[in-house]
Image 1 (cartoon, helix red, strand yellow):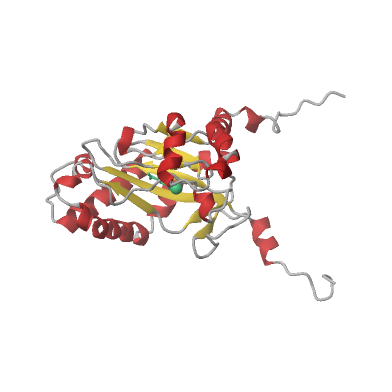
Image 2: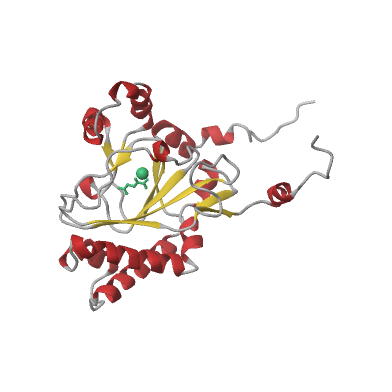
Length: 273
Ligand SMILES: O=C(O)CCC(=O)C(=O)O
Ligand SMILES: [Fe+2]
């Protein structure tokens, strides 16, 4: 008897999102919740204008792009912490952040997830060298290789106003021979891979998801606008953890009932001997 069945084993492999992510180590895609993204940007812009006492006449985009006209590198961190505090204490922000790329995360990572508890915020003023992230892969410094970063620009990002990434093909060839370069500085490492790096063009409304096992970082922003981006890590809930622990750094979202029962279950005395 011929039974027709859906090609449910092949469907994932044929998804362009999957082949893109496996091919490059990152994807850039339109948000699934534009209204939510605008609400997050407005919350950030409102917090910034309140903190700096700027009358809210500019659009959120204008205000954020031009914030270097109001704040210098010396007080930038206070402003950043104020915004982070607002984001972390506003209950709708985390679920909204998740909803920005929920379907994509379910395809790329899984449908029961661990999500970073507090969102990260990066602000790069033009020509400011005080808050740079030299080339790195977070996995070298205690992050789990199962994590992805969901990176959300709040303004259009391009060239040095954005971040750069080494696509996974070049990255893996390089990491294989990296021990030959062990004594070099981050700047030497940057120089040796710079020909293959991509500075990502990501407009507001688009979202970057990348594996932090590939090398990435940023340079001094020599464009004439300020960069604002949010970042948050996600991993499959039951994949191995590294230094960033469940409960401290990560929190389950969408944990399924079978996993809840499984995690709570203890064998009766005597069965484990
Ligand atoms: O935002 C950047 O420029 C770098 C971000 C980064 O290194 C990360 O999120 O792991
Ligand atoms: Fe990183």
